[in-house]
Each structure stands twice: as C-alpha cells, then as structure tokens.
Length: 452
Image 1 (tube, rainbow, N blue to C red):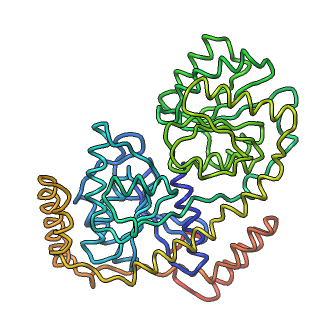
Image 2 (image 1 turned 180 degrees about the horizontal axis):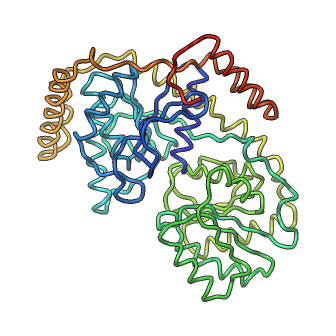
C-alpha cells in the first residue's frame, strides 16, 4: 500500500466519523474481487478488471460505465472523488459521473514535466478529463502550480490540502537503533523516479568515508537488481541490507531501527515518507525537489540538490549532527502530530464537497464547448467521446431504468460505532465486545447482509 492508498483509507475513515457515507471503487487485486467491508463499515468495490502493468488497468473509456453507473445508483452517490493522475478508473469515473449529472472532484498526487513525449500525452489526457471537473485538490502548492499549468485550469478552482499522518502509529523508540552503528534507512519504490541511481552512486562513497555507517533499504522495483549488483561489486553485504517489499504496518518497525532517513527522489508532489520518518524520530536527508521543501520544518531535514556530490555532503552533515547530538529528534513526533492531522484534512475536504454541491450542473452543450477548447484536433475528438458517452448513458437509462436497480442497505454506523471505539481503546476485551454486539444484532432481528 502506497501513499495514495493510505490517503484514501485515512480520509475515508475520518469522513465516516464526520457522518458521511463513503464508498471506494477500485480494480481487483488478484483474487480480491467483489464487495468487501473494512474498518468502521468502509465499503470497497473491487471491480473485476485485469491489471496490465504495475497495478494499472487497461483504459476502456466506456467498458467501465455500465457497472459504475449501477454502483452509483445502488449506493445513492452524490459526489465522485477521483485520486491519481495515473489511474484510468479515476478519469473514466469523473467523465461518467459528469455525464450522469453528479458532482466530481479530483485530487492530484503527482508532478509531471512538459517536454518529453510521455508528459505531453499525459497532460493532454489530463486536460481532457478535468475540463468539466467541479474542483481540483493538490497536496502542495508546487503541485497546484504544476496541475494548473498542465490542465489549463483556473487557480480559483484548485485547492491545496496536504497529506497527513497518524503520528501515534510512528512513535519513536530510542532503544531500537544499534548503538554500534549509525543506520541510514531508505524506504521507497525502487524505480528511476525515486532516484535509485543516485542512491546506488552515493552508498559506496558514504560507506568508504564512515566505517560505522550502514544502510537498511526497504522496497521493491526494477532497480533492485542494480542495488544488488552494487552491493556485490563493493562487498557491502554486511553494511547494506535489502529488505524487499514492506507492508505499510511494518514501516514503523523498520524506521525505528535507523538514525537518518534518506530520500533521493527526482520528483515529489508531497512525499509522505519523510513525514513518517520524522515522526519515528529520524533526521531526514532529502533532495530538494517538487513539494518537498513545503513539508518539514528546517530543523528536521537537510536538503540536497539531486546530484551525487551534494547528496554526499548532506548525508555527511547529518551524520555529524547526529554523532555530536546537535539535534533532538525525540520532539519531532509531538510537533508533527499538530501539523499533519487527518481530521483537519477531512474537514477541509468536506468544505470542498459543500462548495461544489451548491453549484449548478452544466448542460451538455456547455460541456461540449469546454472539451472543444482542448485543441484544434483533440478538441473535436474529445467532443465525440463525450457525445458518445452521453448516448451510452441514455441507452443504459432505457435498458436498465433507475427503478430496476436495487438500492444497497445503509451500513448501521451508529450501531457499531461504540464497538469500534471500545476495540480501539480496550483490545483485551475484543472477544466479549464482539459477542455482545452479535447478541444485540440477533435480538433486533435485522436481516443485514454484512460480513460480521
């Protein structure tokens, strides 16, 4: 589970606590298909679409529409909130929801360039899907500027709401690090965008300069083989530990083993990883790219340009700061707990929902006018795509009328709220609470199709 997935889960939980109904729609993960319930009654639809590469599904444009329309009607959805510029399901959902007259919000979690062919194509498609969106949320001011330029949006329709962290899940443990070593931790997807080539270049130099420094690297990706080759070449098996894939609930156990956290990304919109590391009591070293300079206070982080020599200097500076006790990292968790709070993120997101819900829907001709402005040739193609999407929707309305779609029963949030609160606070009495809840359910004789 990465940063976007964590964002979805935590935001959904807080919105449910604030009294909203939240449904997540995503693609199937292996055998995990169908409908599942997560904590606090969070309902997830795993749509049976096949992954084609790196957990991404093949864009179908219209193939997702019938099932998606059924879900929206069945769950009585009013606002569709898409996450991630790389998600084909997200963009298809935004287009289909606007065709159906619903409100649509988009959150961008990434940064793009403007020069290479991939960025040009992706930016044109983003401009298409966001031409009729009601509001856009970005996770940093740098991300907002990037998104406004890429999608030709008005800055008035773009808000900045940062990511957050559950600080209590990353409590530091001063006894965990090995006192005989200064441990540098890296947790990242091992891909080019995360600057793994820079990491490969600086590890041998740092290990040669400091005999008491070691590295713990967590994560997986196509660049892992390069890390393994570097370790073999320089005989660093005892000083470079490769953990492989790490589940999100295991991240804290890895972080507290370290003294310094290293991020070598070439581009980042926010980088929640450095916030989690600082919460765990690590001094952070990071490349100064994208929205990273907006994330942490200056006393928690040392910056470097995305260059080999500058990174070596920044890591060396952090090693000396830690060795001579110039920074007290034990206070980081309490400071960040106040800065990044999911309840605050949910409250600000709720205000965005409230503002878009008050706006009037545009007629079809106005929507076509917006898409027509996407380019001399692309605009005409986009108009044809939207016109066909509208015709398919009218056909589905005739073939499967709204009255024929069975409405889903509302999850009894109030009934189970006391159960979740008690299990969170008193884990030892969990079995008794479950039995009590099930007895209450039998007494009320409710025929609910919930997996409890």
